[in-house]
Image 1 (cartoon, chains in turn green, brown):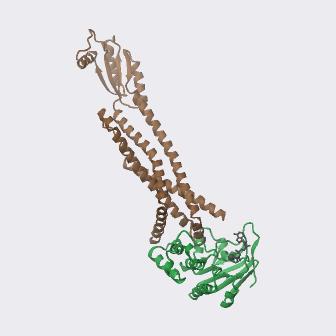
Image 2 (cartoon, rainbow over the protein chains, first blue to last red):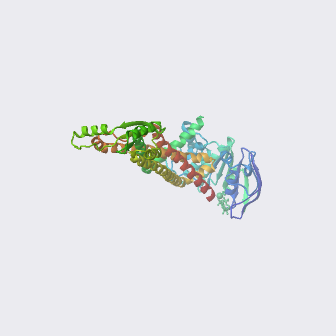
Image 3 (tube, chains in turn green, yellow):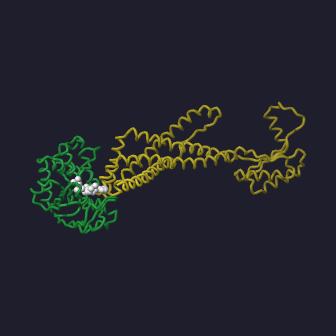
Length: 217
Length: 300
Ligand SMILES: Nc1ncnc2c1ncn2[C@@H]1O[C@H](COP(=O)(O)OP(=O)(O)OP(=O)(O)O)[C@@H](O)[C@H]1O
Ligand SMILES: [Mg+2]
């Protein structure tokens, strides 16, 4: 379970980005985070993924208070999440296979077992034939799917995607949302930031709506 | 356990992959390190061989004691007794002026024709303690005995050699220290640059749950592999230099009927020549990665 209680966030030198945000997400839920550009969607996701710490308030992941966690324990908390970054953060000096391998290596999974899982993940996003391709040679949509493959390969219990359909045409976007629904079906908690009203309307899922740093719904 | 081995094998695979990718840079690095380690190793071999050489010679030092020409026989026996009583004296040999004269005439086959024996009675004194200072003390003590014309130490050159060797050993230590620092700096800087080029990977890895240990591991291995390659290169260079030296002095040595040649250092020294750069490689990259990671952290 993910629980925010009166969470505020300001970056060093910035104004208040999030103000007194409180909500909770149950295991297995699919939740959208919506809002205009600059509303604080990415910031909210970073707080969930424990890559940023709140300025005030408490963020509980499972039963762990992120602010009170020792620095040495943070990596292990982060491994619960599969992250699709808004800017992908793919590594352009290595091929698709090696990009997807990274989370597994971090978890100490290598060799045959890793190879099996990597191909399964690439297959799930329809990139099985592109194992050896370099990310730079992929189309925008393919890169996005590669980022998703990397996020799901270590079978995280929580999947966090920051505008995963941002620059895709409708057909691709639906395809990718299909992937996320499939993960929710098998019990994964899925949190997706988007500004695509159409997408949200179609799904009927719960929405956390941000407006200039405050939660309005 | 399997998990642990996997992680280390993975890091090593990564390191070898990167090194193969930058093969030329890696080879240059090994050469630079090899030369750096080889310099003090050569000096060590020279000092070591000279030390062994003087170890053979230093059983030799002697004090030649020449009596006054007009010394009476009584003072000669008294001195001989006194000498044999000295704790610092290992052996005393008396060479009478007649014996010396006869020997000289035999050697020169009568070419020297004098009507009177010009040689004095003499003693050959072998000191027990080969330390130059002790020999010198004994020599000045003998010099003060009645009837003694001259007590001559025929080991002054050993004293000089000792001094030079002592100096070389100190110089060797200083050199090892300085070059050790140089190695640390070379490896540290190389690893620092690698951290910079690997920056994106490090950042992504941290975001998705990599521990500092995981991030540090391949760089530490890189440092160790650089050190290992450098150490092996140094050993090969050293063997080459020794071969070349022995080859070029073979003629000269033969001329002096000497079989002097440089030998490779003992196995444990060879091991040290490899292991010291390995340790320095590890240390250099540990420091460099620590500092670079801290910098990345604070620049976020
Ligand atoms: N590291 C940072 N340091 C300072 N300010 C930041 C930082 N990251 C984000 N901000 C600021 O926080 C605000 C919210 O950013 P955020 O990325 O959360 O918005 P967003 O809702 O994801 O927008 P978008 O839809 O464009 O991705 C922005 O005004 C941004 O300038
Ligand atoms: Mg954003």
